[in-house]
Amino acid sequence: MKISNRITAIVAGLCLALPVFAQQSGKDVYTKVCSTCHATGLAGSPRLGNGGDWAPRAAKGVASLYQSALNGTPKGMPAKGGHMTLPDAEVKAAVDYMLASVKDAVKAAKPEVEPKKEEPKKAEVKKEEPKKEEPRKAEAKPAPAPAPVAASASSSVVATEASAADINSFNRLLKPASKRNLPPPEDGIHDPSNDGTHALQPPLTAFSSLPKSMSGNRVNWVEAIGQKKINPRYDRNDPKAEPIVMDMNIVREVKGSMPDVVYPHKQHTEWLDCSNCHPAIFVPQKGANAISMAAILLGEKCGVCHGKVAFPVSECRNCHSKKKDIAKAPAPATAAK
Amino acid sequence: MKILSKLRASIALAAVLILSAVMFVDINDAQAEYGDVVINNYSDGAGMRPVVFPHWFHRVRFRCKVCHADLGFKFQAGGNEINMVKIIDGQFCGACHNGDIAWSVENCNLCHSGKPNTPTQVHESTVQKLAQPSGAPKK
Image 1 (spheres, helix red, strand yellow):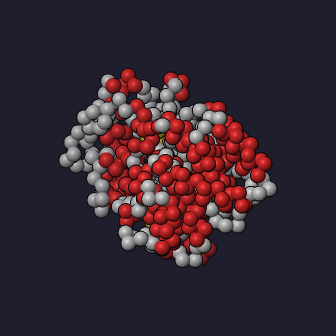
Image 2 (cartoon, rainbow over the protein chains, first blue to last red):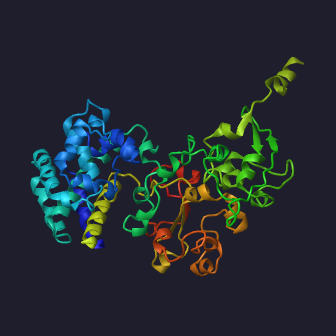
């Protein structure tokens, strides 16, 4: 396995020499258009990377899939995904991209996919032809069947285009919306070669019915309980155990112009026990706790949870929510004297 | 045939990963779920994949208090020194993952599902996401 990975590394490296195409890659089109439905299976659409969804469709042949994508289907697929300005070739590329994600499951359709994928590549990379032959030979050793070679080579091409686009993306340090809450095999820390990874629930399937937020995993968990969308157990054995909720707000006056912090015990005790925070993290006494944003950022005090599992510090106004009474501020008073 | 398809999948994945590495996209800036905890205290040494604990999945089903007060999980990734003996004795994960409340320990690969050599971390935590100059050591 490791050897084949190394060989693939060489292949991938060489593929970088390929010219960048003006046309949008299948992956780009998928991300911008198709993923709206095909990421989560909205309206019964086949999901990216889900072999079971795709196998019966792919069995009809890739030409039939192209037709469905271009002209729409009675089941609900809009023609060209509703983006009529997309060139046919880009729609087909997106179909190829989604097929490539399930190529294990749709082996049956492979012979038809293969020639179509070969044509554009040969046309677009004539000059690089000799270079491209080398990696193919090399790769033929670990995987002698012709189908996998074509499949993995074409997915490298797709990746090349996408990476080139990523370099000059709008904000390269910010994760785009399309990369949030990916299913476990694509999320970057799960090992896709582990069978258990594929049995895990993709987060978006769980989140679709929950209230949204602007940060973290984009779920407003406090609202989710408030609206009774979820009812997590308060006792692991007793589904009927009710939380002991304490409704008491603590106001912390803060320096500068920032609004004061209102700390609500209510929302916290919905989830937590008193002993979770007191006395280890917060001494239960007014004025006894020195809290700073720096400490929170580094994972202390509120930062034990906020910035890890609870909403992060970017949501300033969730805590800094009490406007200061400007008239009573000391500065203007001294000026008057 | 299955082995072949797995091989094919891993080749394709490796190609994508390596490409992104070559294009200076940091592999460590992986994209997993906010709050997922990777626990790799002993896994690598024991030849197992590290554990990925999905916080979001558990908080849909249990309030924080159940694990962090009743079961004694400290608020620190890797800080609980969990091992399989403790789990089969009903401590930590084993309090629920006992075939009664949740599926049991024989499903090794459902927890031990992380990429090998992934360090212990709270994934996507603020500390991890602070923009750093390129070349600076990753936290």
